[in-house]
Length: 106
Image (cartoon, rainbow, N blue to C red; front, top):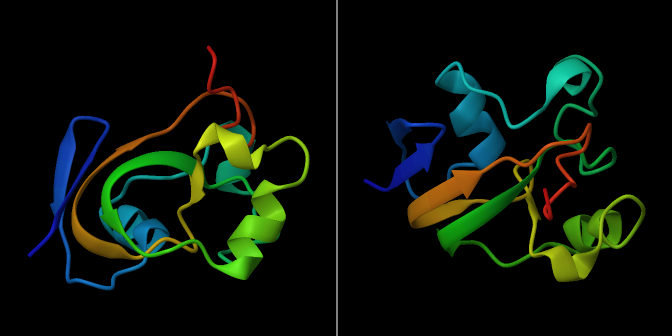
């Protein structure tokens, strides 16, 4: 079973599990502050679940690419939407600051 490393926690999940779902089920969140409550619920519309992911995950979906190409995100940042990313192997996940997790440089 793949392992997700996030905020000092290790979560096991099945291959193909959506990252956002795995984090929420473990009592963790891919959101910052108020975006824990003000988010699109996993439809790739708001972009608040953007995280850095290192490891084996699914290819970027068209919906994810579309959202990450709009402000305040940038496709070149390397971020992924947790609601569109599916686990394929062990991964390390990091959440950056900012409402959308967009502050990669801080």
